[in-house]
Amino acid sequence: MKIDVRNITQRTKAFELNCGADELDSVTDIKFAEPLSVYFDCQQTSASEYLLKCRVKTTQVLECSRTLSEYENKVDLAFEIIIELKKTMRDWEVCDEEDEVYKILVNPNASNFDISEIVRQEILLHEPMVPIGDKDTSGDYIEEEEDESGIDPRWAALKKLKENK
Image (cartoon, rainbow, N blue to C red; front, side, top):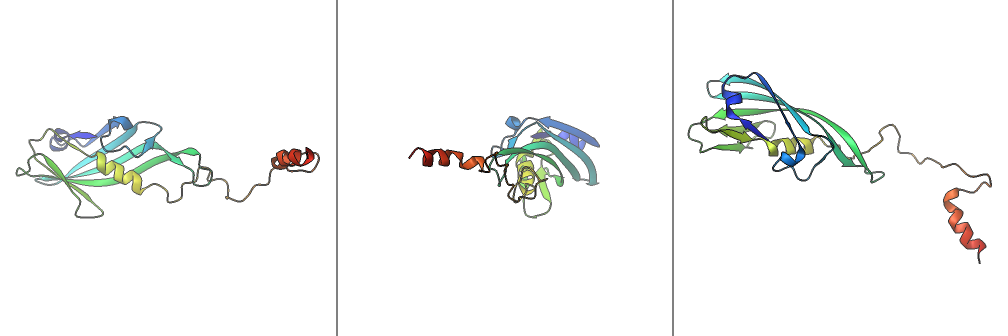
C-alpha cells in the first residue's frame, strides 16, 4: 500500500486508498472478505514533520476458536504515523523505536512510501484474542432435540450397530 509523497507535502488534508488484499506486499497471513479502505487525514506539525491519521475499514476472515469454522470479523481501527521529511534519507525507512507511534523517515524527493507492514501489524494487534464467530451465544452446551423415541439422534448410529448383533 504505497502512498504518494505529494499527498503529504502538498498539504492535502484528507485522501483515501482502496486496495485488495492481493495488492498488499507484506500482508499474506491475513485473509480478507473485501478490499481494504484506508482513510487518511494529514496535518503538518512542523516544517519537516507531518501527522498522518489513518483509519482502516475492511472485513477479515477469522477461524472461530469454538467451532473451527470461518466467520467474518468487521475491522475498523485507527492509528497514527509520523512522517518526517529528511533529505539525508536515500528513499524511505520505518523507524520502530517507539511502541505506540509509527514513524517513517522519507526523502522529500522520493515518489512514494509503503505502509503495508504497518497496516498488517495494526490488524493483527486488533484481532480478538479468542475469536468467536457467534457472539450472541454464551458458549454453553445446547442440548439437541430428541426424536419421538426419546433417544438422542446423535446416538442412532450406535443403536443400529447394537441391534445388528
